[in-house]
Image (tube, rainbow over all chains, first blue to last red; front, side, top):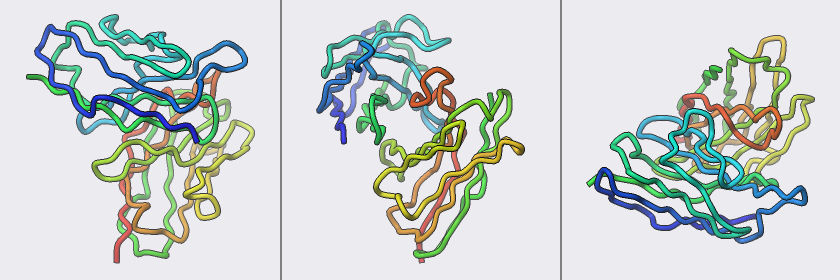
Length: 112
Length: 118
């Protein structure tokens, strides 16, 4: 199984500052079609997860451009610039390259 | 797009439960669907997938115990949970697979809570 390791476990950010979350994969997520199958979700408190980033660096519909994704075949970063209070929750990376589909353990973002 | 889970509850170890997920706002029969679970205070754990043509894939932890199915006439996804264990206690979410890459979960329900305890 592909293991995704997220860091840090939690991050506390002042509104207006930036935050970065790391996700490392135990295997390359680059498919034979040249697509990097790494995704980011946000689970706000008491809610179900919502898709933020698809294919490593593409914003899902309706996601503000304060969010951005980048990386290589195995190391990935979610960056949130100018954090707002509505960004609180747990961020998960996920790989959809192969079954079983797997998620990282999550990074909790809190506001200072 | 709306996905509404139902059928959760408290069940004893070894017993069975059937979850439903009612879909609306899209052509259900054209989409693959997933079940994902989240144990209390824990992260997300993919459980099973069914394609639009009813092909299925399961996580090893539930293979042989859980069965995913669908009724396109009723726009409903199911998860039959048998031989339940305490470690199956979780919120169970249904999610739609993205039309052009069904592995990708692009819409989620609000979840159904399953508690396995004597």
